[in-house]
Image (cartoon, rainbow, N blue to C red; front, top):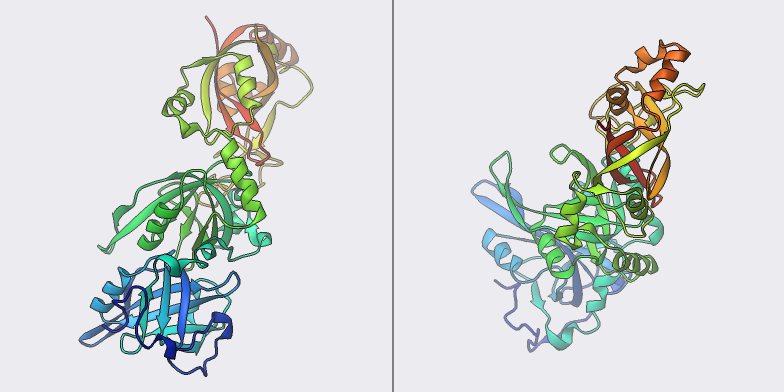
Length: 461
């Protein structure tokens, strides 16, 4: 097999006879025999490319660069054994030398281009086992090329914040976008069986940025998954180019899905990445401590109002939610005033709507992302204030079914009560001691604030 050199330093006798050409010097008229040194920045798994009667041709695609601004795609064709062996020779992040590639103009309108990373060169490299050779560089030969792994493929202006995706998911669905994120959690590579019986590899990556606390990414390319495990760690920053946004029915949320055109750039050398890294290193992640994570998820733990306000005003990020129980007194409960105490809300996520026919825009909600179609519902929207011996929370909301269970009457029944009946109902609860189960969650506006939500409210006996 001619295209894999046994001389891992590429120290073959006739190297001097080959012209060393960079990507920027490419021309389809160059004669064979050029010598290239490149950083591999993306690589797909080897697959069957063309089927012919009695014969299958396999293909291996990868992407290389030799400068911060110059990138090119390469394709290797061959029989299964040759492609399989080549697949074990180099990986993403390796430095390789390529001898005798065929240089052809890239067909930008072809169907294949949709499944390749976006590159700067108008050419592509075709590598065959008969004429070409790929050699892995080691030690000193890597010097000067390793830093290319950290150069961005896109300008900062082309990068989206996570909050732009989460809360505009209908517009983002199906798009390929660029993300600058920090790593929250890296899973393990799992083997998944597809509906057609194939076994594929999957890696789940959970990330965050300053605008939103958690976002899941699925990686289906085994080579990319191995690269992530090698070059990324918790809190490290990664630039993800051309990742597809879609709603995952199994996970019931908007996620990113890595594909054959996706490129991961670890610790990218751009100012925004340094800012995000400082942010990621400063915050305390809930899963830094298993003890803290289990504590925050336990609704039976009793908090004081002082402790709740401290959590809500903390500079530490809350990646999911904090649950707990509070004993307090209702200090304000104006259900008999002239102010309206009901509103139209999405029945799926309780997001406020201006009118019944308005559409929910919460991308994390099945109604907001179009998976379900339901009209808005009129629900209780009662402001109340609560206090204990450590402090007070003014104008938190008693919403929907929680309020109905507390009052014992529906919104429609309440609207038919007389003013005196409403006042009598108010005094059944005002200045009474209640037990409240609550959740603290990040604000859906992505402004770094947190919401105090009452999930249950009952009078104490």
